[in-house]
Length: 89
Image (tube, rainbow, N blue to C red; front, side, top):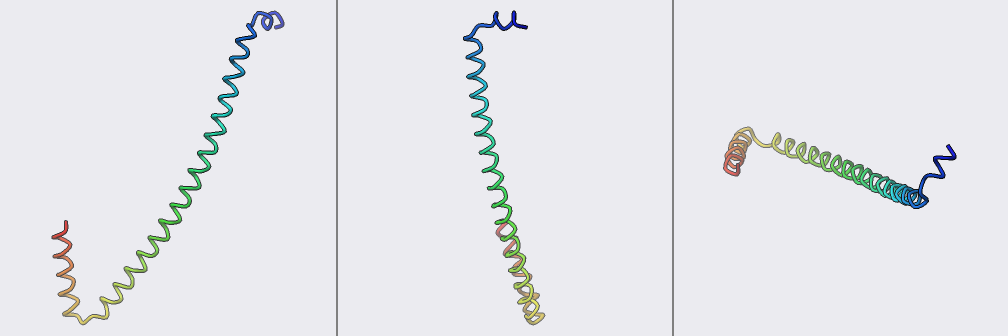
């Protein structure tokens, strides 16, 4: 084993050491980037959940308002909304 070590060029060892250092720096950078992206995903997931909750609450309020309308008005309103929806698509 000693014989193999004496045959290795010191410049080659320095090159390997430099590459290992660069790999460690890159690894640390990637770990930090991954942590940052994980935090962003969590924040966006939380924001999405809040927006979905608000959407469901708004739909519930609209449904409650529609339920309070007289039956004839509700039918007319529903057909008007369907027509408007079809025209926009």
